[in-house]
Image (cartoon, rainbow, N blue to C red; front, side):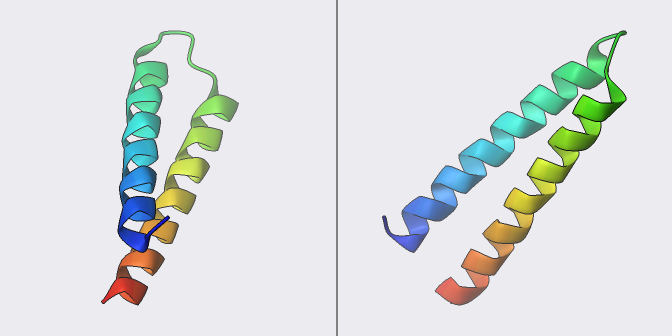
Amino acid sequence: MTIQAHIASLEKKHGALEEELQSVLASPSSDDTQIAMLKRRKLRLKDELERLKKTKH
């Protein structure tokens, strides 16, 4: 997998996590543990994306 393809894949996963997070936040019975987990996963993906984009240039 090329770096560009890996970046695209991570961006897609990041977007999916954002949608899932928004869905959980909109739920009246949202679980704080689940919200925290989603935010951590999203942040890890963002950090990986930034690292890959820097190595690409």
